[in-house]
Image (cartoon, rainbow over all chains, first blue to last red; front, side, top):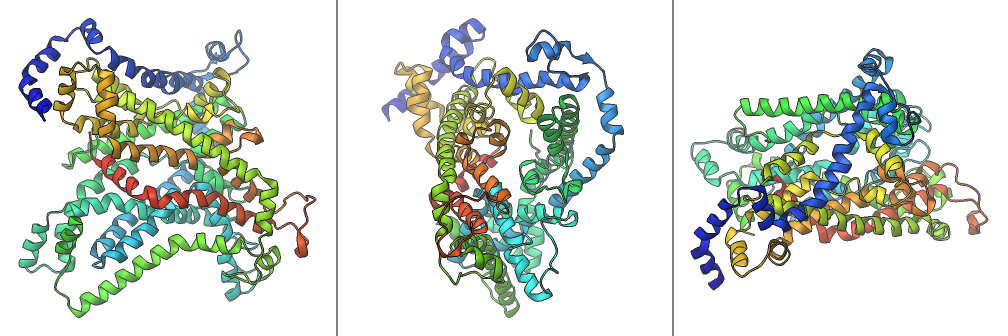
Length: 330
Length: 303
């Protein structure tokens, strides 16, 4: 306590000390520990984030890892420069439209169904009066978030594979053996499968952020609206939803910005030779072309295209949010 | 608990018949959702004790007629899933320690408003959140330049820091009253001492939450391991599970006594492996749930 009092008394001195440290030499002398502490993070960023950005030149050359005097850096410098030829090949190629269509199909399915689901579920949970029931339910619905995508895949296989899947067998017991759809191995069930996994895994956990937004809506607003004769729906429409609008907009910005990032972990697990033509998205394409097939330049080009579009979209969505009067992300 | 009281105020104290119908429907929806989230686990647990014959021949069931632990005997003898668990523990513990070291040491200086060059370093962080080199350059960096293939470093180093998690910690440090730091400075403490003895002990909840974000990420990750680790002795548990599922239709015949059932229980092995891979996370879940919930709240505060 006395320390605290002393600190308050000495505060002007401390502030003065900081203001005089306005040259680099002085700053380094005074706070050398802070700069030493920055080192691991900064070095890590330079090696693992900024150095790979240099590797993006592969998108503008016909990269050959064996060209040059040996070593990756020499190969990068020595490979044949081709300008935007890789991009032309990407956009003109037959793969591009397929990739774009598949990526957008998955993203929009997620945006239209998996994005509103936690909002709706949070509104439902918020209406429950029985607190123990609500708490127990919340404990259960958060569980899937914590298990890995491989386990989600394992569960999906065990429920839906055409040989011994629980749900498939259940359907067969109604429609007859062998008549159930081959869910894991046909293109038309691929997007619903991805969407179903996402809904199962993230809807519960996604409610946390909206529940906290709902809890911060001023109770007086509800009181006032009730006095004005508002019913359940009016309260939800005019008090609750405006109360969580800011949170919804921020979450939407993040979702829109990540529209091309379908992720590869989940898709890569569910993808097989039978549904490959709808399962190929930009992320899996980059992996298969680049890492598996060694077509480094083509894969880097596709990756760079995706990164640039994502960047533009996230900045654009943020701008839109600001124009609409929300605070945005930055 | 004060929060719960507020919720009651938010709710509806008057009850009309129509209102009650709506309530019942909401309870049913919530209950169903909760069931859907846990039933798959219970089904897999139950069917992992079923015999291969029953899994393949009987129509859908939850409780097996014949109880058999053959599948577990098989995976014990095979041992790969337990080796996978051991590797996953190593990857998770060391990986999380590295994550926390890099994130905290980065977060503390960035949380000091008087740090010269703070904006520059902060912008460096924001850039990596928005843009990156992508998978192929990183892959070449790790396999060809750093030669980390088949080492756990390939799983630890590329994700040594998450900008998002670092900013969560930074915001928490920023929220600790300046007076505490100033008092320490007057007592002659340097920045390192202040960080270790004052800032870290005061940040328990956020450090716990962020550690858990990192740890669950390491435990659940499989793609890095798939790309960089081909050595079977270094397989993590997620990779073992993925392999077992993909092979579940054609496991190799091995000279193992299957007892009265006489055939390798590939489907049952698949189920048992899923159970063994799922149990660790479900066992720790009750203990980490509250930190996670708290972490989402901390993360949602903008900085």
